[in-house]
Length: 146
Image (cartoon, rainbow, N blue to C red; front, top):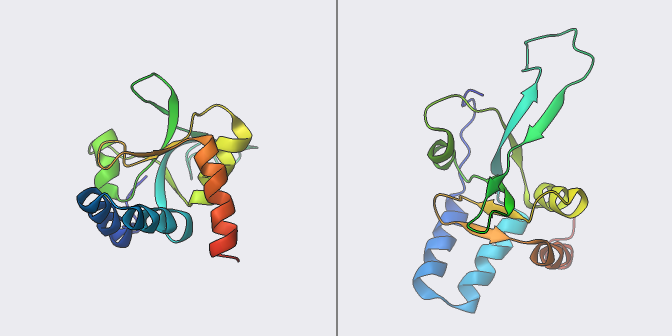
């Protein structure tokens, strides 16, 4: 998909840099709060038929990509920017959706195909498994009620 709208997460990336530098509980908590509240991620997908390709198609199917970790467990990748996404797909066009933490949590916890999701797998590489995601969903309800 063509890059039609910039997607960046400068606040999150700054918090991740601080977390890596300080290695403190406070800096880790700040990253988690941003992940569960304001961060938005590019999710690589395959949409069939492609938008505008076949207007008479009865249904549109969306397939989310999975990436294996070192133990060959599949994770949904979540990219903080187009630059990070390019580390996966290079210059070719990649269909994407913009998702938030609750979107990924729903996919991981209800689908069962993935072992979790990973933010910027070729960058900061922050991964979240189901138990952590359940904890973060509860934290989100408590700290950021809608």
